[in-house]
Image 1 (cartoon, rainbow, N blue to C red):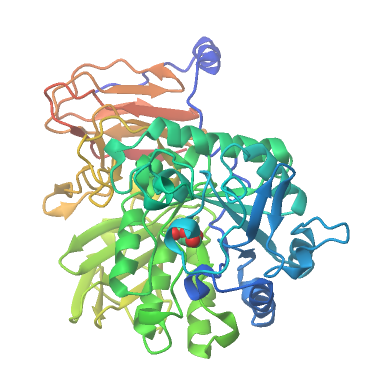
Image 2: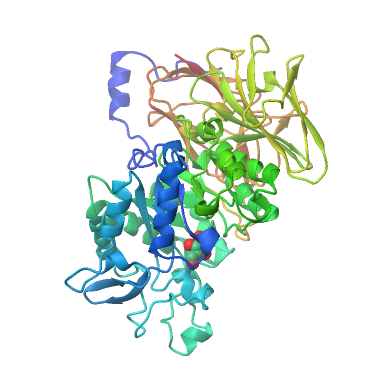
Length: 590
Ligand code: GLA
């Protein structure tokens, strides 16, 4: 037992104030996207077959249908807006964006952005981190590819980052999505590179193969782009939406540069693709929070498997995105929105779960077969969203004791956010009967059993992975190794105790660094690392190491009074295996 590890006297406090603390990844840009961005993007509905009138019709629909007031504010254009790049800058494709043609013969998207702003909306633009862009590789049939000689067709931002950041800022944009095809898809053996159509580059980033990618270089490119955005408009930089599909370990570092970052390949309007993209983000609650959100891609609600004939699937998709605090970017044709689909995306109770100000991503607290239970701690203590997910095609019964959520069964207020009829509470156990592919989304308001105690699942937005530590060299993106997870080892094996999955434990890779943003709000932490006999665990409070012997089965008790941050550093991988567990972390509030 170890307590009052760093003393409480004045001298100790002065020493602590001077000690180094770890930078919070979200600090630089927390205010740009305090809650997950919401809006509309044409790509899922139209691919590249849209123009300014399509976008303005969507913008008008956002306003008229009330979606703007629900929070859907960003109207983003995607690939296909460039004509060419010259020494003087970019020329916009005015056959698609007629308002971009200025009287002096130059082009600008400012008139377009001004119209959106006048409607109370925000505007987003799109570019690529390499020389060339996704459509040049993947949408060859479109009429909207850049034109001119090889250099003029290099409309991506590489080599022009500050210039483009300045242009987008001057035009008034609020967001930029920065894609990565240019550094992934234009290697020397591509036929169009061999015949001189495009300049060879890398590939620097290999799809699905982080171990073979030049990760440091990819990270530097996005870091430079973020810096260019801040330089171009310091008081109000554009929101940076990183679109590198979970490749090059982007999921581990994106939070330092972008406000949202794609965790996987492109979604499509099929049930399987939706689940695949959901999974890529759902395993990473410790990598998201205010100012840095995991992005499983734009919504397919309204399309394909999620259209008006598949409302169960549409509600499930919307529920899952809300539970993991994903950006809600609509991707269907708003001018043909059915009342049923509008009711799905306009459900204010569900939107409120997504937009909850605490910014906690939901945590998977149980999974078996086709069933998953996800809990999301909301800003008010004792308030939680609970999703019961049926991923399969048969009926399913799922249940969870409220005690697993540290909630008392007395005086519980339980509400089903879709139909008002899901969720039975009996003997302190909440249970649901789910139709095939149904997700039940409940909001629970109750009293915590231990009034002052929070476990990691109650506060993932405060916990940051500042160093990923060990990564298996043969990892592939699809079968992720997550450097830190609540209730699971990095490999995905659940951490269980007495048959129940732990919500108070964090599985980490060897050498992983966690930083907990305490903000002086806690007085005490206890942790009980079981089955561990190493003193190589490093625990720091406000930058100062807490001395301790080998951590065995007894609980370690730390004084956190007034502390701003806690660091938990796992032992390096030396014959002890690749992963460790910070067991039973219990934070007691002031
Ligand atoms: C990539 C992105 C998509 C979309 C297309 C446009 O595939 O991941 O979201 O922007 O490019 O070509």
